[in-house]
Length: 422
Ligand SMILES: Cc1ncc(COP(=O)(O)O)c(C=O)c1O
Image (cartoon, rainbow, N blue to C red; front, side, top):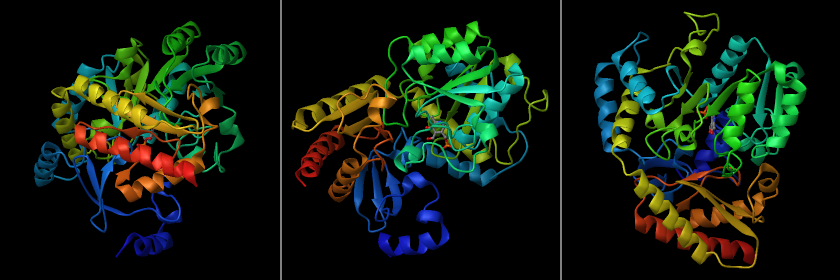
């Protein structure tokens, strides 16, 4: 069956035919079947060089043999044990050694769960109600995160969402990433009631927006001076630029950190963790409740351990060099009159059409989504699979070869020219 036929079946079962809205695009999404290294294959066996990489977890590429082997062997013992296991200690120890601000942690099954619990914990610990998040910042799809968020909520024109009670919205205030003035103003008004500031260190759900110098340090200082907590949402950035969190690169130590994606080796995972005194407020030792049938799942832990073992020895500088070469190749090929910008941070990148300075949410929101999707479809034809949305991030993995990147840069340039033509 081809994608069109599969879509007609899936749309009878799932809203929009998908189990996450970011996977949908018109007229229907290509159904995928298999992944290997830097390549994803659709149901007709057509290969694509994959820059979506399952929205971020696959920094080692698809089906890394060490992860596959670890998972096979774990499944031989158990699928889920619902009791503490040594695997949790192994993965937890690797994480705390690599991200020193995470003294204690809890594993969850998704980044959404991780930020939801982290926000409840911040409120429980401080006894305050207000959360400050950034406009366009995405922290998953629970009520407290879906206030002026990014990713699919921008693509689909729902900056928030229906179904969120006004009582909830009133406890979340929205500041501007890279704009200390906007944050200061909010602290002047609500400072003593702010439980926490949560931000992605590098915005990755409004395309890629890089942090301006000292913005994260500024957030650290203002939260300390108001006895509020700083939560860095490293669901995308954790272990992406080195065997550590971005916080260590930026030199900013948050009170709490959330992670996901990469640390599960391609299996469902999330994590929230941080200071001992804060984490000890979590049940059963403390009064803030949090639980999950599948949290710390035996197989997921095995996949995560295998992924981090690999990553410990990977050449992150080489990944940066490859990504820089790709950006250069794009720059050389993409010479034409219309406005565009390539925004890259390490192995994260996005191409913005219709704008030339993606420095803030206000700027990127003016990008031309319609044109972007035209380019996306042209690229599908050419065998390049980008994340299907102007406000998503694309990723380069260790599995991408120099040749993958050179050829893709040419195809992207071609697709852009064709996009502008009609
Ligand atoms: C920064 C950030 N936080 C949280 C999430 C939510 O993670 P999940 O999709 O695993 O629930 C995402 C998802 O893309 C994310 O990018």
